[in-house]
Length: 538
Image (cartoon, rainbow, N blue to C red; front, side, top):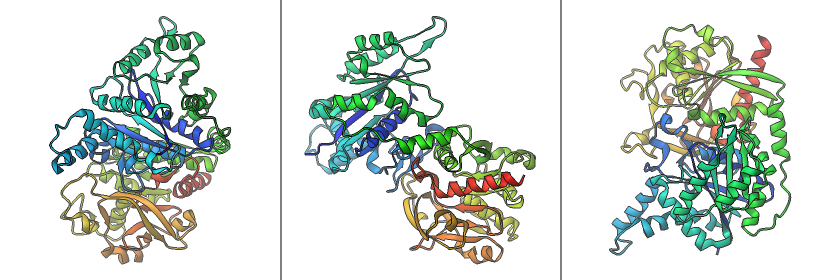
């Protein structure tokens, strides 16, 4: 029998309190104490995964090494802990019901009436324990999406109730709530937290620890009131005050002894004091930059910054390695199509990143941004669709193929420099059918790509259906754009660059997914270095 401990994190009062950040911060502290930790997210929506969700609905779709399209919180988990997640780390109601219905159709239930209890809850419990049963982890932290009291969350809360009973001292429940401050009364109010805990109690779950999100410090009187009305000891009332950066939260939780209280509840003696030296070094560099650059992020969904969450965090990670603050200038791609003055738009930036995305909207604006970067020697970084836009722009304006395009945007283009991958042409279902997950890439020496990675063989994560059409590869190379990276098996071109440009790199993969606090991504580092150099020449 596995000795893994399970920590469940639920939310109350309101959504978007930061369960993912609290879960990730706790994981950092436990990992710093020498334990092995993983985190999973249970999402109550009926979609099978976020892969087909509009970014405006759900923010970024994060992709794991094994090709799972997951919730963006898994990005936080990896960035904080430097531990890879997988298919098992993100479970949706849709995936649970799909599995149970498939089993029922297969006859696995031998004609039983299939019900929420026990069949759905058994499937949820099975998926919660998959990671623990591998014997790879001392702790599995499970974040429950949504808010206690939501109809959608009921099966998950019931599953926690059952697991707490079955696991005994191997399970603990942390409840994250909000303590509002009423300025007219001049005081913090605990009533919403009391009601939230009462809703959990009505579903049979008593929180062991309550983490209170607040804009003002909570005093002993507030702790005492929460303790009294919510059936927990005062030392298990944890303050989570607003922080200047999410990377402060682990240290705030350390001060509040969240990890110690978790270990106490699980009847465990801490093996060692937490070693957060690397984290503290990162934070010091983050808060004490020596220089600053501004990067234009040209995208389709810029109104919702969470649509590009991993890119923004990768900028932070890379910036600290150069003691540089990276400011992002958000530019809506469609705006660039409206006869705006590009020189004015990009006058105050030292780099241009054209972001990933799908579909026709804003594509010409992205191509205009690429052209400006190429012709004005502004450091350029294109990711996925951003690389494809760079290829289209070069074909139109350097090779002279005026009508060049991606077949995604124009299936009848006479110059399909970006074409659909051969194995994608017969795909009907859109969910989970793209080229997903980690693939190897061979890098040419004496390229910007090699200079960044300092090795010839890498592995990066992908999420796309379209690719560089290598029919045109020689024409591009003859005119100054080279293929600097390719897949060793399929020969798909994974990266392009212009050697004569100070920094012009496009990659088909998503380097942002692999950037962490401990290991900032080398391509983002090289891009920021180029931006710093650009600033020095102005």
